[in-house]
Image 1: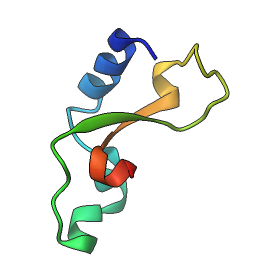
Image 2: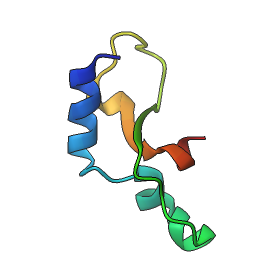
Image 3: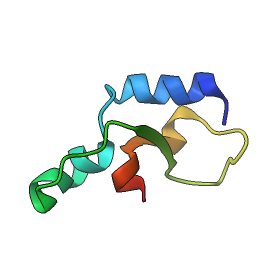
Length: 64
């Protein structure tokens, strides 16, 4: 995945873990999200030619 795409997705998601936003991970676990952000594939349908909507921002802890 190219760096520009990665940065664009993180910017679109307001530099926030989307797993926490969608599922309330922090409220459930009482453990804060990591500040290290990664980009998660929602689908591998276009692997290597990903579109923005194929990806979401997640923190490292949630991504593991």
